[in-house]
Length: 326
Image (cartoon, rainbow, N blue to C red; front, side):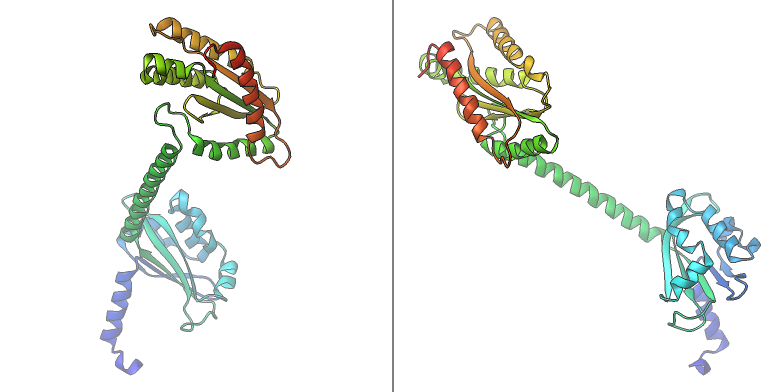
């Protein structure tokens, strides 16, 4: 093969290699003395002419590497480690941003390989090649950034649809699908963080009477008023579920010594009273409710037992307060 490589052809190959790489440095095997075979003008900041040994070369590269990328070139820092690594691999490489003479950083790929025997991991003479990959890397980073934005948008859309699927359109509270989803989260939180579970069942008073007497729009108005009052009165972090036409469920994990429940009844009653005082409806909006505040039981998977207990308390209040009870 060598007989076909005339000096002119060898020169052409050399020129092609020099065109491909911005920096080519040969490191001697015994002295680690550095020979700069080629260095493009845009890398004159490196001042390769003053570099004598490998440690100086690494130090120069390190100082001119973008601070965020310096960790990536530390694999080149120790010549002994480098030799050990290259005894197992034909070459190693890293990507980083190198400062050019215009003081801007550009993406480069630094490759170090053994130069003594082709395709062999043996030998101690190294060739250091610095390749300009800024255009490709910039394009990849832009594509990656756009992909991340797309994924983020898709996640937002999915979450929006996910929540919409569990939301009651009329009141903005969650529906029964939301109950199954959020009760699992609440129970897990209570168990993992040693909290109690607050569970409240609420039923609008006299819905049938309002619908029959004043029309279904009256019932819808009352349901909206009750759901708004619940949202304001419920402890922070509560899941509010519309379980039926005029039935609501509220639950959330709370610290055992939480004082949030002290204001729950008071705020709920005040909100309903305020609503009735500020509206000229031919009916009064009122509700009956019952609640429990207990630690989760061992291996508890649903809130059904606590919901049943709260429901019984709600019916007891309804017997006392709802003149239109069925």
